[in-house]
Length: 145
Image (cartoon, rainbow, N blue to C red; front, side, top):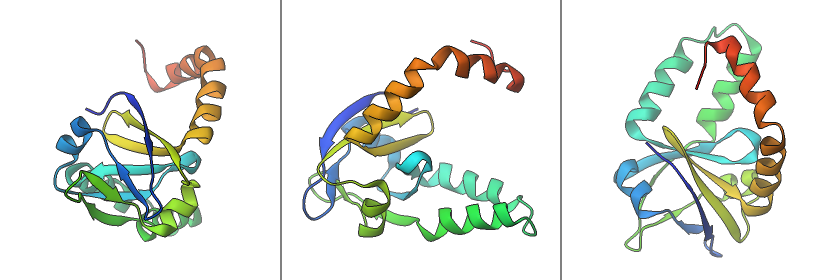
C-alpha cells in the first residue's frame, strides 16, 4: 500500500526521485500514465494488469469508454529506475501534468501520483475544505469509516 506525501524536484532531463519505500513496492519496472486532475498515475505491473482487465470490460460502443481507454493507454509509458533511484518521466507526461521543478509525490493506496507542487497544494486545499461533504457522498457507495 502506498501512503504519504513527499516533496521532490524534477530535473531538466525529466528525472525525479521517488521515495525508497515506493520504489520497493513498484518493483523494477512499472507504468506511468496520465492521471485525473492533471497528475500522473504510477502503477506497479500487477495493479496495471488489474486495471487493464477492468477497462477491457467497458463497452467499446460507448464514446466515453473509448475516449478514456485511448487517453489512458496512449499516454502510458513503461519505466524503470536509473542507478540513483530516479524515473525519467517522458516529455508528453511532464507537459500533461505541468511538471517543471517542484513536485509532490503522494501514495494513494494502490498507486503513486506525481503532481506539480502548486497544483497539488491548490487541489489539496479545495478538497480539505469539503472533506466532510465528500465523505457524506461516499455513503451511496456503501462506504463507512
